[in-house]
Image 1: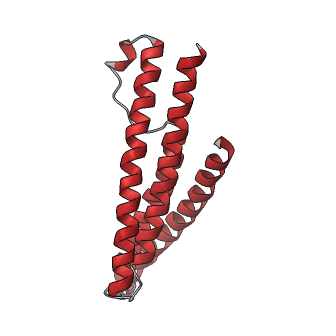
Image 2 (image 1 turned 120 degrees about the vertical axis):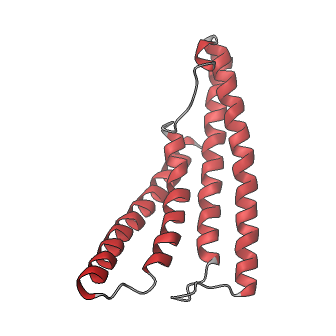
Length: 159
């Protein structure tokens, strides 16, 4: 399970990195076009907004897997080691539950956007695709939180 989740997160991270690089070039070209030729790139703002949602949702699971999120643990760090692991396991179970709910909401929202035919204003891109991608990222994040919860519970049982 750990190998699969690690590979899923790595794959989504590569996609997020590619989207981020494209966004950098797009914003740079848009600014230069606006400044040099008084001609911005049509849809650059739309693409940046949609790309940002992809970058966030596709990379958040990887960040959690590496435990690189900002955490305030001044209280928990005073607990005995086993108690810290129990708290971390419980927190990861809460994160998993919230992310599953978020993913379900995003998939439901994507379905509504698909049925209604909602598209972006300038480029006419179907928004449901981006909501679905965010849902996929949320599911992988939930699986990552479950993996970490299992690891912390195993630590408690093993020591």
